[in-house]
Length: 336
Image (cartoon, rainbow, N blue to C red; front, side, top):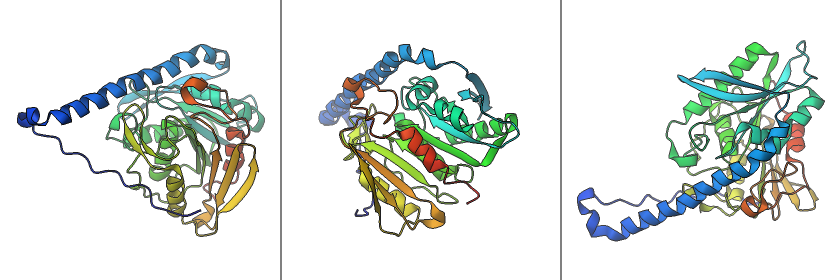
């Protein structure tokens, strides 16, 4: 696989001064058109939430709703502590982050992390974004909010709280997410690399420019993306409710491998049905990067609860993203 630099963000179009706005009616029409395009896309995000709300309730058992004050704001989260958790043994912490216009209970439902927590004894937390619809500040994602560190600080404060309340292994905290949550997971690898041992992302929204990433250590990453994703295009380009520029996924993965210092030849992983994978090797501090392509896959969690296909596309069962992430996470800790 060729390693290419991520696509450059196109230069911003200069807007006319207010006094000259009549002289540039084309710009006005263009701006109005973009605004009108965003309205149905925002409604689409809300529709996804409403369609899934009714099916989420049956999974909301044996969990805890909590809050923590971070950056002067009360932030919410959903916590799952399995019966298999042993307070005498330090437990890994999995942080699973919802996408734009979604919420923690939905992320719990589609990812099925609780099932693995029951089996392996780790703790899972599903943090909540802010504003309406719920979202994360991740390199301009979901509306271009500028203060990226607010959400990073929230996750760090949440880890602090859980390490006080439970016997959390500080070397084994892992972040993962869907869409905007995948982009947030990547941001955590840049800004919180001293606390996050590895990350995973499904249909991640990695918005341009993303290259201002200076982790204190390279963070292992496992990535999943469908070739027919209608929301975060596999080939890149402008999309989403805020018409943001996305890099081509292959370019982005290659650049992530470069960031982790991977100099070995990429290895093809065994294919399974619609799924093919590649592993980047020879990485600094064994911070491997694995990328799975789901042929025909949409904006959904492979192996998880299907989302409305007419809206997000096809959900593949040829790979279980959650189990595969956990297998990957178990190979990495801050001690290695």
